[in-house]
Image: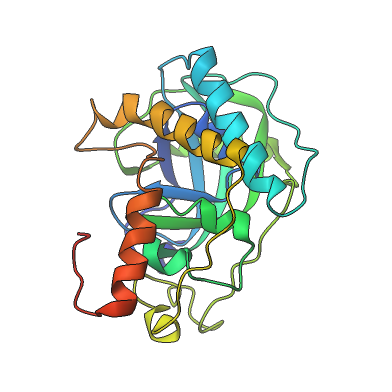
Length: 252
């Protein structure tokens, strides 16, 4: 695993707030947004933080995903029945990490996936698996190693998940698992304008609701944002600006 994930991570794990954590493990959420690039490739365990999500946040995020899937004609989405906290939920496969302005222009992925590109760095996730019985455990900041005893027990309880619209993110170099990295798509996108999805009133409202839901976490955790939904407009603007000038470096 060490040679594949590119660091000293043997069983890497990431703690996320609910409902984002369960949405990722259930294959509904396919892009995990961060202010920093992914340090790994391969299996990433997902742990739910201790904060209980309020009903308004859950509704806002479920509405958001209903609307972005509807862009691709998917209307039957089975959301989690509940969103457990302080639990190890399952895992996903991180296959790449690109900048927001790259994802929103990437026509090889569905339009709904491009609408998920709403933070500085987009971790691209495939092959979700969930634990039939989530494990209670404590989480930590950033990516950390799962305790061996927890890993040994968890790996035996995984169940593959098929999301509403699974995505296979194409690697620029199939022989190099790290080839899909920030900047790797830039040369292919020079002069390409982001395809603007025609936003229905429902989609516009859903994006605004998701932005509001994420803001409550990002305001109090600026140094370690768990999930940010609030940068979609900024990312689209950055993409358009880069089409006019490759020297636009507004985003860190």
